Image 1: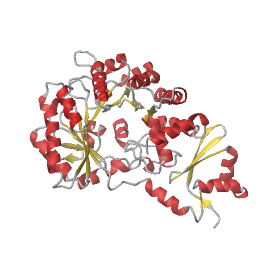
Image 2: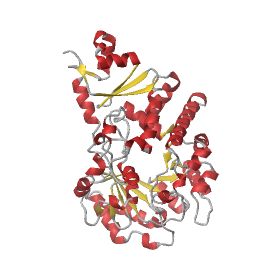
Image 3: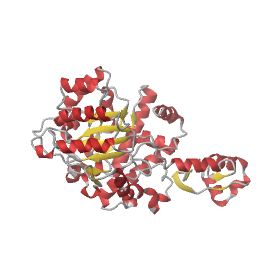
Image 4: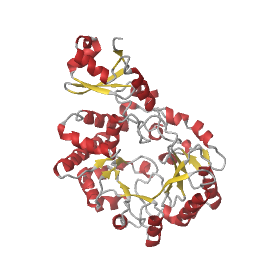
Length: 461
């Protein structure tokens, strides 16, 4: 059988460099001459070109067709044994007044924002009756340490009942600002192998300007103190910065250096969401070009650290893109299609309302039920629009060379446009993702970057 063309998409990413991709996630980097030969059929006159196109699944033959079918299926794979992340927001109270809080948390004194005991019992019943065997529990807020007694209760009750329901507690994590941490809580976390996540926006001046107490005092000292405390006890507190215009002014390198001071090898440079308080304080939102430039600078600095200082630092944005390019199964729930909303994550508010993911709880229209009355089957059906109106259903995304490596967040699309259909040409994420993917594909075969990419990929092993 003479090889035939597979469906392919193309994008010019440099002066004499064209990227050609397929629906199954394979790609080829072609010179302009090779690209024209592909389009006009002249590749048939050159055995080496034909071989290259067959190897990259741009051309189909009798040997690679089964591989193409298998790879295409993997793009939509949902592992049946995958965990379900059950976020519980025990309170919407908080002792900080962070400028961009997407939950728009209330003050510490507003106890009416707490989850009551009846709803806590309903939460336990809900997660124990999920079809998933492996359950992860994530405590968010507000500030969850305001309800530490209820954190202990939920974990202890789940462990008492899990055998009856054939469940496994895959992990438990507390997402805290760390300012209410004390030795009693720390000991319980260490003894019970509970994960801990927090926020560190960068150097003291930047962090304290964005994440302060209600009276204006900064929270930097508390975060660093407890990160050091847990690190000395062989437990790393997961931290991430939220990138604002203030962060852009400080610069990627200064923020990365702050993480290196803490001995970190990874950082997630996440742009601020215009949700909750972030929607009110839009002056914090960086422009799409300046954020893309910020990410490129952070990437180049990480490569410099690796090549010159022998220090591995990886930005999760870059890591996710590289893994999406290399591996057939996309593991990060926010950068795959369909996304993991309501399939691998739900978020429960203090009154028991169910949202399909963490950031969705800031948008009342995206509520999909209540744990006291709604079954998981109903949640799955009620979130079909959210999960499926991603790039494969939008014409400009469907025909984009990056449709297999990118990810469209339907929640942020809804928050921005009041619809699950993005205005793609002007969209923030679309612009940034294209810039970064162009940037990475041009460097895949560059000796300066190859060892760094290999080091990143080892983190998946």
